[in-house]
Image (cartoon, rainbow, N blue to C red):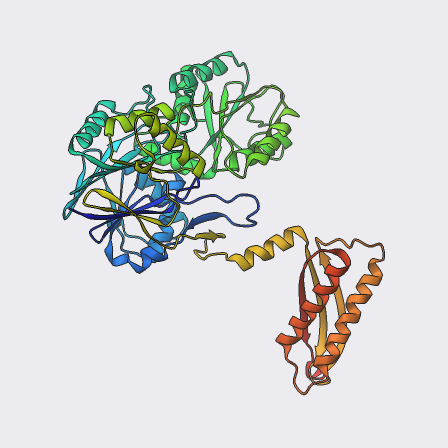
Length: 564
């Protein structure tokens, strides 16, 4: 019998930064390590990753990281993990690892190719009494796997993202055989995605998607522009295939996506004949890139497709200027935090062309399992316990209701929050024993450092109330103000009409505070600046009910030394 603990550092009660830990008899198995993109109120933050302090403290017990597929919310945090443990072993499909390698190179993360281990649905990895197996699942990116961990108490199955779209090209026979074997040998816990647990109706299928795209391309007599996310490799291939059938030229725009496309071509997952590629040149008087037989795929991550469509609509893009004869097909459902930008983009496009087709979630092929597909997975595996993952609390709760419908009791469907440690002993759930640190780390640029609450508060103040800078030259020898103070405000608007009087009051406060520090034997510059900041902040808030950032700039200037 095994002692098993399970917890999530990310991916539970949220959509993103999936990282799940299975601790079996003192061996730590990590399932995925992703990132999350910030919402608009996190000013300047590029990505959000997980707090890895627990894994760092226990890094000697880590067996490896086992990856399900190549989406950023499942692999985007690997570079951060390698920074903390540079010898960690990583297991994934050839496509997943190819995409991961590209990301590690872009982020300038030092790693060894020996760390990256390619697996397939036929792989069986043995670590003492524990065996790791993989099974193929249908998703919108190549080589998406579920992960099965065999313990002495039964399997722990992590489905990751999946669906049962019968029009996908995965080997369903092999998948169902694998699931049947797991069920026969006994499943202790099923870690199933919950994002689609509220979806009662079936979503669009690949076949329906192909029919709609075929109609659009066959009926259009002019250029068509599609917006897609960079990870939609299968969707890109479907559009390319239809375009080729109708003798169209294909142009792909998006620096990051081009790299993924090249990887997909090299590995044989994306097939685009060279003769169908259109190499676009910068627009000039002779070249407009507006051929009637041209299909343009505008791609990127998160907000990038919208940003490029806006540039095209405004006529400032270097490759494509949107025209009234163009058809624009939007296949990018907005991410959290990009809804306003997506809505604004559509408005801008309509100013140029009315030929706009927006594919909402009911028209796009399935990405996440809906209620009936979740039931199907549960009925096949018949687990003792179900742990909803990959979803917010409302999704987890909806999954519990789904499980209730097929006979599971509430105590068999374990809802947890990030950091909650679920314990299993002798094949039975024994409760939440403890909690591990699971904070978010905000990353700005390529620096693998937490932006921190103080910095974020400063950015919020800058965005909301602006900044006031007070600059002055101080002679430390004579202890006099020889120039200034000069008051510069950015993003701050005085609420009263007598702005000049307010500026004079700030100067008055400056001289009063200065008098206290310039009459002492030595000037304490740090306390001097702090007092200026506090006194001026108090006055500004009293007058305007605003709290701009106050920055005193005191320059030590001795004119006699300068002359010498």
